[in-house]
Structures are given as structure tokens and as C-alpha cells.
Image (cartoon, rainbow, N blue to C red; front, side):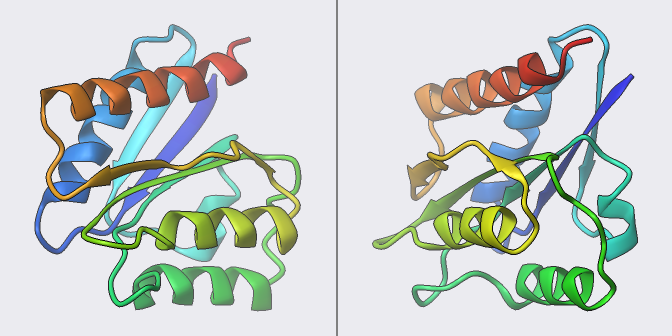
Length: 145
């Protein structure tokens, strides 16, 4: 069974709501399992066929926790090559963090990334949460056996 990790950081709860909706979308596809987590070790990343990072943008950058996770995975030579990578997040005015995550996934780890991150300004509304569910479903459909 294919496994998807939805890993997120959320200070205000907006990205958490998005992460929960993305995980709901993944669950709609039979034969694909999802884990929704706030924390993961670098070694745990290798256990999944797809890694989806939910990250808000603060001060035009990604959060320290996610940056540190990628740095440790790199130092420990965690093999993520050819895994599916995706990113999403909420933002107030700039929204760079999910794009930075995709750049690291693609260029440092050799992951197959879904090029456009899902970005929602401020809090996700009903329409935004439905976009998150479709985003998760689309990722899971790539992994169907």
C-alpha cells in the first residue's frame, strides 16, 4: 500500500486546517494510506512514497523546523530520490515558503515534485478547503497501484 506523509507546521491553525483537508483528499483514494503529522524525523521521510509539506510563510521564508528537517535529511543522506513531493501553505502577503520547499525537494533530493504549490491567503474558507481536498486526492491518484 502506498503511503503519503502530510507534514505541517501551523502557528495560527490555518495551515493545520489545510493539512487536515489535504489528508481527507488522500483518504478518498483506495490503496493509499496517509499519515498526518506535526513532526517527523529525517529517517521517517524515507518510509513514504509521497511527502506533502504544509508550511506557512513567515517573513518571506519557511519555518525553522522544516528547514532543519531538510538540513538533517541532507546531512544523513536520507534517500528521497523519485518520491513524490508537494507543498501547500497559508500566507499573509508573500507566500514563498511552499515554493522554497519544492525547490529543495527537487534540486537537493531529486524528488518528483508537483510544481505548483497550493497557496491560500489567510484562513482557508469552504472553497479553499475543497481545493485542499482535491490537491490531496490528486497526489494520491499518482500513487494508485
